[in-house]
Length: 213
Image (cartoon, rainbow, N blue to C red; front, top):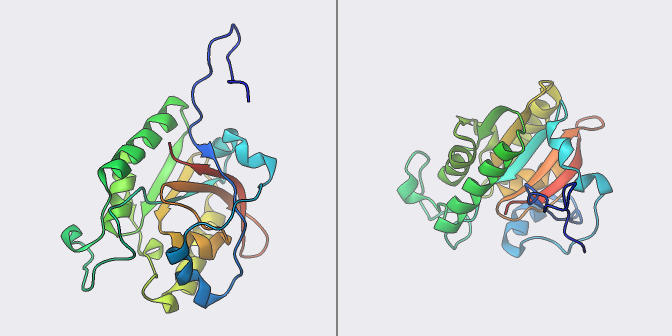
């Protein structure tokens, strides 16, 4: 594929995100937690609008961002504690660089940011802080990997927040794979983001899917 160029022949800037695509998994509660173990499902094309970065600036758009790359592991060590990062699985150096580049590219394209909310897990808070320089912890974005019974209420709160978002700036929600899968049916990789808007009754409409650089 030819390299995109600006008028006059100069190369266009690299895209904020590399677009990716995915196929929704079957919606069963027992499967949601298991998806974290098997990783992203085989890829299939999304709607062409997924490649349109202009969607990030449209009013009512939210970005569901899975935290950036972490140290190896699944879930968290036994007995981990919120507020004590030393007990959790945290970002790797590669993840910190990934989050930093994402924030830089958003600023390069002057994508307006309205509010940034994050899970209270340290890997999410650090992703948000590095990328956006601002973050408000929100328990509704906390992982329910170890407690599937908490999933429905947290998913409902996430969807309600997107439905209520009407500001012109982007609503950023930094969270975990299980939370994003429950809300959208898609399985994001670490550092992958879904642009969503209010869809039908109590559902979200995915308008873009992007992988951080």
